[in-house]
Amino acid sequence: MARPTPIRRSPTAVPKGRAATRLAQAAAPEAASERLQKALASAGLGSRREMEEWIAQGRVQVNGEPATIGMKVGPRDIVKVSGRRIYLRFDEKRTRILIYHKSEGEIVTRDDPQGRATVFDALPKLRGAKWISIGRLDYNTDGLMIFTTSGELANKLMHPRFEVEREYAVRILGELSDAQIQQLLDGVELDDGPAQLQSCFRAGGEGANRWYRVIIKEGRKREVRRIFEHLGFTVSRLTRIRFGPIVLPPQLKRGQKMELDDELVAQVMAWAGLEPGPRRKPRGPAGQPVRKPKIRS
Image (cartoon, rainbow, N blue to C red):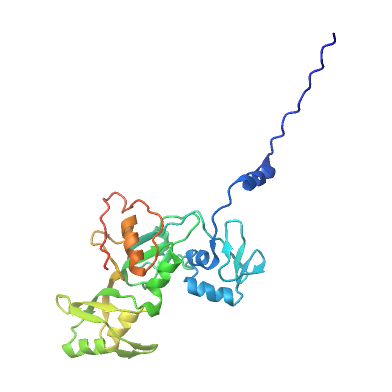
């Protein structure tokens, strides 16, 4: 009896290169999507309300088509604002907040044509996100700087309509009289409009110099210096010690940074009326134990 001829099966072809990538993408579960205005706000472009206005104005496109308010986008969608592609992040959802003690002589910009030191030089690198500076400090001012990955939080702290307090320690040459302090509290007229201090307290001093603790609710350029110059006083030292609910920790020396832990991030976000997102571990200055800065309610 003749032996049956064995049937040989050809081995299954294993896709390689781009074919393998496309196959993996097709087999992978669809990534979670979210509303367009929220994704744009998370990318640091502004508040959700501002993003809705941009969408309504036709400035936003998704996959080559005009976007609509409320539509959802995911990692595979191509989003452009005013013709420029925006890379949205969907994998990193937690809000990160970092505080930095700026030194005099540093500037608050990402790129300086003159090659001067910038505050962004000292910040840790991020993947899929960017640090957003909350407010600015001029070249000769030191103190608290806040950075976050949340565009909504940055907008809440910076926008003039929210009137977030900024507190400074100010050293001037000379001494304010009671009448002059009251004048600063009542308001003075500057080149770009009226300005006033919310509070002004004497904080000691030696010789011809006197220290004051002041609070303002605006962030106009050199505003504190210009308010004192309006009365003929020169500010010889200016340090920001608080911005909104965050107080500069005494142990955080110039040039040092500290990332807030999940508990403090949750407190700041709650203060701003926002969701904190997933939790994370604390990080403090290199070589130093983590001490929590004060968060005011």
